[in-house]
Length: 464
Image (tube, rainbow, N blue to C red; front, top):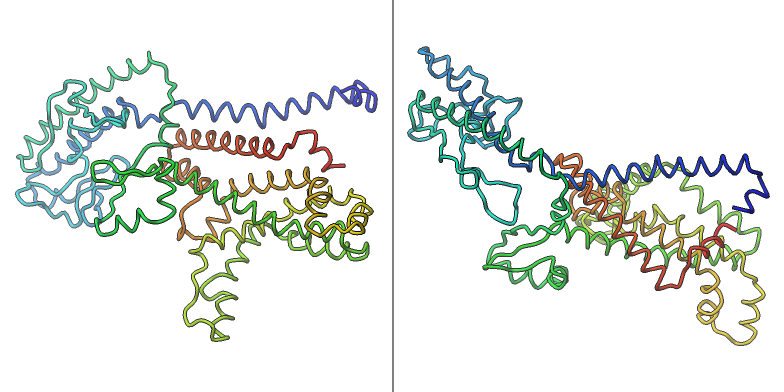
């Protein structure tokens, strides 16, 4: 601060401090606090009152649709507010409209076509507020066991639906008042990351599945286990662990590829060659990242460059499905973020006196000795910055695994967070996942800095 005051004076220094604080508040602190609040609040659809509201709405819709079947004209019934469901599958209602089976076909003994809302009008609904236990709405809140039976006469079904509508309305009002007095904050959204899911695996395949190295590792860390003869897996945790392992592998791959490049450019090349080497690194990255990723699809597709050449040479007869192999994603991510690994190392290595390397060689030091005792210790800040930047970018990669794998590989955790926010419309769990992922990545970076004895002030050498 004193150096800033001496260099720029009080006015410019104060303006700089205010700008930094405003930037930190608006772009870092407030968004994170908003995400934290959302992560600590249960989604409305997981509340018991939401289930009661759904019961009331389903019963009301069921009544409106069944009223059309009381019309004496037989052709009037099929022309109600019904939207056919392919194959008679029970799908969510659309705009409160009833969903019968395809073609209005009736089940055996039924007096009307299948209507989704009438089928859901039942007090015996499972509560989702407590996933650890199997609880039902009628049992917890002492409700009568009522349901609209399609084999009952239409007037009886309407009468039952009216009773269910009244029960749902009264229960919704009561639960809404009770929930308003309780604290809305909970850690349940974070708990979904560790929630186990039943994995239906046939008996003849269980031995092979359990023998795989990946599943053995998941079992070792508790992400996969067997109970009561069934296989359970913590899906969120397995995706998290897989993504972190992939990000570490990408970082190691980029380090081994980029270290020789940085050394060659900084120390082993003549000054006139450095310009051309730098241009060779920078020019490909003048293209938009998304375009570079899509360019890779033309290389690895079944009719892409690699497969076409291999088939033309007669090396293969069938295309190699590169988009099914994790190694392809590794290669593309390493290529995408290679500059973030190269330039920090290059910047630090360029400050190393070449006379030290020449003196070591004159004293008989071998190449590996020169690197381990002179080059790497000097370039440690640049290596640390490059590894941290590459790891964080790889861990948060979304476009590369999504475009390259096209859903043919296990998704990365960033895709899971995206799906929580926009596909399943569960932004509360998505916020919890993103916060947990951020802190885990920060923890890994802190552990890496501690293991390599890297301090924050060492990073200043990278920008000198």
